[in-house]
Length: 373
Image (cartoon, rainbow, N blue to C red; front, side, top):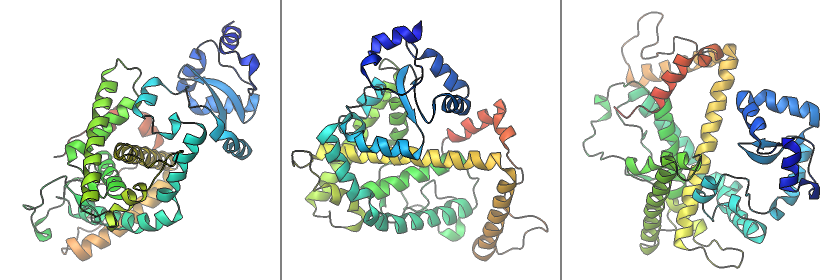
């Protein structure tokens, strides 16, 4: 009954849709997906094929998974109307400048500007910077400690802390790593360096987390949405002010301002140059988009390792060897106790079964949200 009423309400008879069920509001489909996402997809692929319609989070959706389906989608992607299926909170906070809220020529023009900052030539600029920042993070934060969560951050000005009172490296002592917090901070700071050339003060940078929560809020009346709006305003204000300063000082051609330089000549579908406000918003959206992709990749890597404990054990052994060599040659001249690697706390294998335990999930949550010591 719900499926029939839903089809009539959405006028599905007038559309060329793949097989599947949505229901009246997508309630059953949504809860089945939340219960077991993998089984949800598997069961429907077996029943309907790689392309099917369903309901995600109470909204009708089409799922496609084969290479052919993806290629077919790309052929008509630009002709699709703006994605009204997205939650209103997301559409609002993703702004009118986000590609997901656009269609037609506007969407084509926005995507065309992406090639300047995400193409092969851009990667030639990003890659060595990322390599340097990652090396400094590992050698500084993981092995020496005492550097907060910046890991040095060369290649872009880091305003997160005053370094005038930092002790010399010879006086730094190893500190306990907080994986969830330190890694996500490093990731976010790296993206600010790449896309803005400067890292904002840490309290302001952390507004990106509030912005992310606002995008995922259940409704506009939720406090998360309100906080997300405020966070977006603070971030874009900072970026726009910095961009105008860079332009006024004639520093767009400096290496750290690569992204800003490319977007300083960006135009819309009418060949009108982007406003400073649009460029600032684009920077924020780009940092957010790259951050959630990196977070998803890191999460997937950890999940895969937990499901393959033998690979996890091999990786841990390799890490112990490398870290021990670096510590022994650079930071730990004294010989460690026999059979132990000094400073390494990776003595327990975390498996998929551990992850499923409520107490482990609670511990992870505490680690991720723990403030800087």
